[in-house]
Image 1 (cartoon, one colour):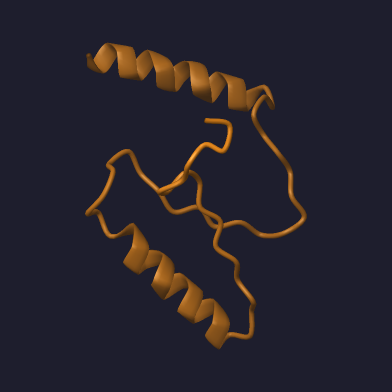
Image 2: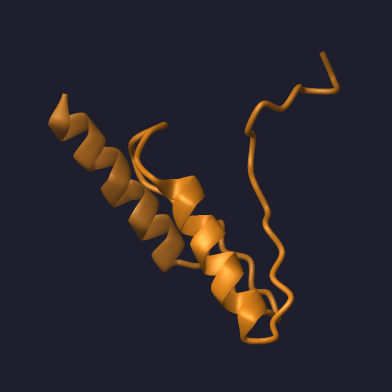
Length: 74
């Protein structure tokens, strides 16, 4: 099974290397995530990062993908 995962990762990395699936934005982006779902401390880390950014005068925004979402087309 690990060979299949490795293959998918190599294909994905090659696509990103060619610029496919990449979107350039004019603002700094901090991405917090990993392969494991749940219980790995991502939310506390985001809370800590946001707090530090606010303390230094920044106005951070949090964008989440797919958490507890419902597909409106269904």
